[in-house]
Every structure is written in structure tokens, then in C-alpha cells.
Length: 340
Image (cartoon, rainbow, N blue to C red; front, top):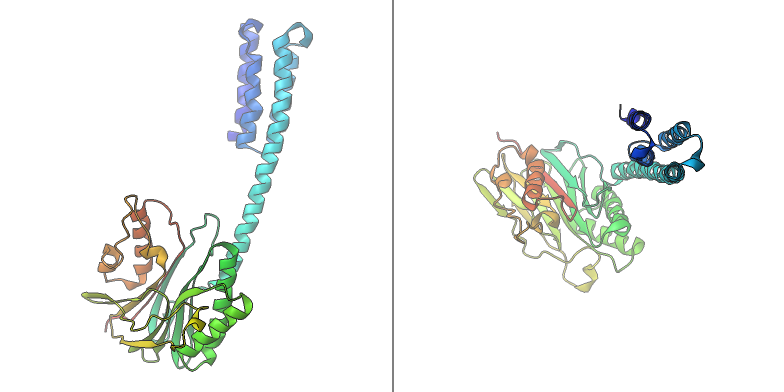
């Protein structure tokens, strides 16, 4: 129906011109037809509507030299048809390119940010990722969960910078973590290996904050290592608190700035408990008045029941609080145990 609209307008103008006569100056109105066709359709609709418009001008005014407005209308229609065709062709080309980019981004996301299974060893998992870039699926935030026979290891991180450089750094960290999580004996060793890969492949001027965790085989305790990252949030029925990190440590890539070894903390993890890892896209989100999002006290956190939907609820809540799409990437990962 929309494709027929230009030709309906042509028919209406032609009929009105024949009925009212040339004194009403209706022929110049045909110039809007190829403009409309270019806006709602492609090149062929634009060209065909322009050709039909020009043909109508010649049909109702065979001797163009006898009526100057008809000459002006004919030239204008031809010019607008050419310009509209080029515009429509460029728009379609850009649309195809954007579709290809989305396919590439989807493939990259499947490689970098792989889907996390709902069950990882003794605990359940829920993940939510939001990219701040309008057409992107991935950015500088990252997450991964690795399950072995001895434990479950995970990482949530935030790479310095934006754009392709941030994605490259995130890919390096994830690739190294996936290998080290199987092979290294401790989280400290995993972090050291990731840091070495980051320096070797990206350079010493790139860094990332990260929180790593190791969940015991029976799920009763979690060891947490912070590399300059905000502490995870511990949730249990009727309680909500940040994990107390004695030494948060330096970000990955900056570990050589101190001789102090990285330190871990271990927290108990019982039935009905959950731990939430996040990036600063949540904690640094502001509303129109400049007030930070009340992360730990928001309704999505206080409604402790339903940890499986917590990440989705929290992301929706912060978007509503800000009033628009988020300005920074967000990664949320929830590990929880069912109540017994």
C-alpha cells in the first residue's frame, strides 16, 4: 500500500490539472512525488515515480514551450528524481553495511562473551550484558565462567577506554583467563597469567579492573580476588552487604607498580545466598539531576527473591532511573544457591 502512494498522488494531481485547467499551477506539485518515493522506497520506486510524473507533465502539456511552469516542473522532477535515486541507493547501501556489521558483532559476541549456562557446578548463574554503543553488541566490559572438577571460576571486568581497543583488550583477558582458569592452582596465579598476556599482546599502557572468584566444589564458600574492581555484593535473605576486601589490589596491567602480592578473601556461601558481580556502568549511572543510582538499596536488590531474574531487574531499574539508554557498558553476573 505504501509503495502505491506516489502513484496515487500523481493520479490526483493529473486529474485535478485536467479538471481545473492550467491556471491553477498544479504541475509543479509533482516534484514532491519522487521525494516521497525516495523516502519510503528504493531506487526503482523513485525512478518509476519520477518517470511517470514527467510523462504526466508532457501528456497534459505537450508543447512545453507554450507554458513555462510546465518546463520548470519537468526539469525539477527530473533533477529531484536523480537526487532522490542517489540518496535512496546510498541509504540502502548503508543499511546493508549496518546489517553486515551487526552480523559481525553477533559473531564476535559469541566468541568473546559466550553464553553462560544456568547451572555451573553447585551454583546457578544469571548474566546480563548491555553495550552503551548504539549498534554494538560488545564493548569494554567482560565476563566469563569456567567450570572444572575442582571448582567454578569466574571473572567480571571493565577495560580501560572505549571502542575497538577496549574490545581487543577484553578479548586478550578472556582468552588468557579461559586457559589459566583450568591450569593454574590459585586465583592469584590466574591473575598473574592474565596480566602477563595483557602486557605482551596489548602493551603496558592498557589496563583493566577485574573481580575474579572461585566457588568451591560443594558451593559452601567463595574466594574473591579484586584487581582494582568494585567489591561484589553479597545477598542473603534479609541481608545485603558488600564483600569486605582488605586489599583491593591494582588493576590488571598495573601490578608491577607495587611489590605487594595480590590478596584474596573467602566468604561463606550458604543455601539461599547470592553474590552479584557488576561493572561501574551500574554504580556510576546518574539521573537528570546528577544523582548516582542507589545501587545497594534499590528495589531490585531489596527484592532478594528470584535471583535468576536479578540481573535483568537491576538493568531495567537503572535504565528507568537514568531515563535513557546507558552511557557506559554494563556487565552483571549473579551466582546463587537455591534455598534448601
